Image (cartoon, rainbow, N blue to C red; front, side, top):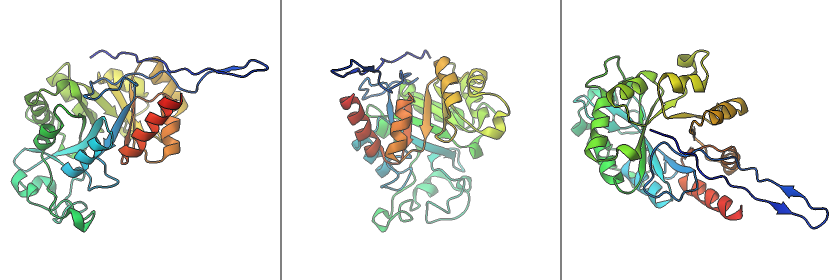
Length: 292
């Protein structure tokens, strides 16, 4: 999948005397490796982290629908496998934090998981909110919003065929969303498996220090044939930003909820930002483009 460079945003401020010309702080944006259903061509992607998870229970249909309404161009979600091998949308390996049940996700079937309450932990108003399957989310997202599917490390094995990578990829193809889905994982095996399963699938390597050793982000992206690099804002330093930009590698940064930090990252030319507050990020991006 080829990466296309987006337009450059420049502003020139001219004073009367003496004449001073100042270039905008905006860096040249590197476009996303996937398509957006609502691409405004600004070269930047607003991503709802686990949906609009600052306001709604994370990884639920309510959170995903709200993110879309708030201006997100992509939603991010996490997947694990149920006992009967169905990709389900939940972040933790255990049910304890975000449901009314206990134990491991893979100890229950998809039907049993969907009967659990995944909303009350957040607020009583969301009682009865179910754990969605990946199929549920893709059925909603098709034609509306792009999706970043994070494959959780706990679901990855050494086997390529028949695992969570193949099952989730088959669902994406079933809905015809290949060009609108970006897969990511902290487990680099998942990235390698996806590339082996489909040479055209878009993947982003989620930086994990221990697994990376002394290899640079550019080396890792090249080695695993990934299309993008995802990292936390703490890991996105000047040196890495410069090297990734020099190699035309898209960068998506998580999880940013403060306007000042969002602004700084946008000016550095990141491709997209994951935020629990997609409404805040969307408004900021719109205002920055309008003002500049």
